[in-house]
Length: 78
Image (tube, one colour):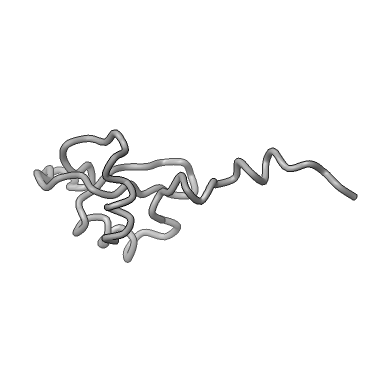
């Protein structure tokens, strides 16, 4: 979690956590998470950890891993 927060610190992101639900969370947004449906949000470490543990298919979003881009743009070799 700390490594993800450090990696994402320089990325543009909202000031506050987006994962607080109806009560809103005033903690700083530190980590971006996403799901397999394409939804994503920035959250504080506590809410990100809660989401990762309780919501299926949620993961820490990371541009460094390249996502599907490399797969989609591969050359077809048979």
